[in-house]
Structures are given as C-alpha cells and as structure tokens.
Amino acid sequence: MPKGIFGSIRHMNDLLDNALAISAVKGAPSWLLTVTANRRWDEIVTEWDYSKTDPNFRFDISNRSFEMRAHCLFSDIIRHQIFGRVEAEFSVNEFQGRGLTHRHLLLIMKKEDTPSCGADIDRLIWAFLPDQNKFPELFSLVSK
Image 1 (cartoon, helix red, strand yellow):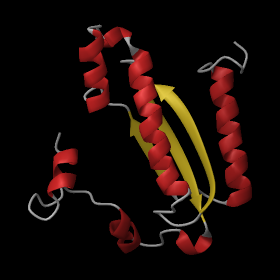
Image 2 (cartoon, helix red, strand yellow; image 1 turned 180 degrees about the vertical axis):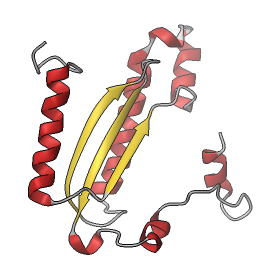
Image 3 (tube, helix red, strand yellow; image 1 turned 45 degrees about the vertical axis):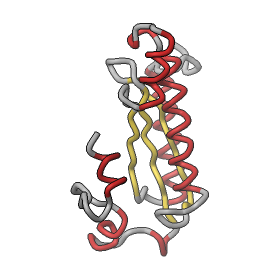
Image 4 (cartoon, one colour; image 1 turned 90 degrees about the vertical axis):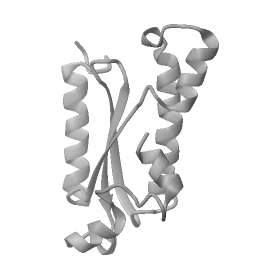
C-alpha cells in the first residue's frame, strides 16, 4: 500500500523517518507522551445517552472529543510551555484494537529546559494519587 494510506506500513515507516530526521537535527527527545481516548469521558457518555446509539458504532463522537482534549493539552505544553520551551515536536495518531484514538508525542526541549536528573522530572510529574484533602478536584479527576 502507498504511504498516502493512513496506517499502512509505508506510512508508518515515513513517520519514523521523519521523527529520526528531526532528532538528527534537533537532538534526542526529552519527553514521550501518550494520550488515549476514554469512553467514560463526560461529553462522550452524554452524547451517547442523548442520541441513544451504541457507543461501539459512534467513533466520530469519541474521536472528536479526543481531538479537543488533545489539542488543549498540546496547547498547554507547546504554547504555554508547562514543561519548558519546546525546540521541536512530533506526533503520531494511532487507533487501538477497540477503535479508540491515541497519540504519541515526542518533545525535544531547549537545552536549558531538558530534565537532567530525577528531581527535574519529579517536579513536573506525579506518579501517585494526589491527596484527597489537599487537591479534591484533581483527586476526583484522576480517580474516575
């Protein structure tokens, strides 16, 4: 299949070649993020309840919801620089076996904003549930 067909071997190899070329010029990636759609997001459940359709046949709703959320997240990362200044970025969309969208994002940060030790990463990422008393809203979002 030609590389113009989304998901074909040639298409995926072309994306890999692009990512390697960007890395060769800008340096090694600092971050790899993966964002996955969730069928339990409120806007998806509400639309399915409203339209009375089987969720397994309404990928347009889950994909639209995913794109809106991913756009907001990537806007925060790239425009608002929540991880620091981004030198280059590269993303790839894929579909899981259940049909849900997920996206991999490689970020190459400016030299001074690249994490150099575990403390730099711990400052930006929590690998535990937030305290329910200190951060009730964040806890409710994570524990759904």
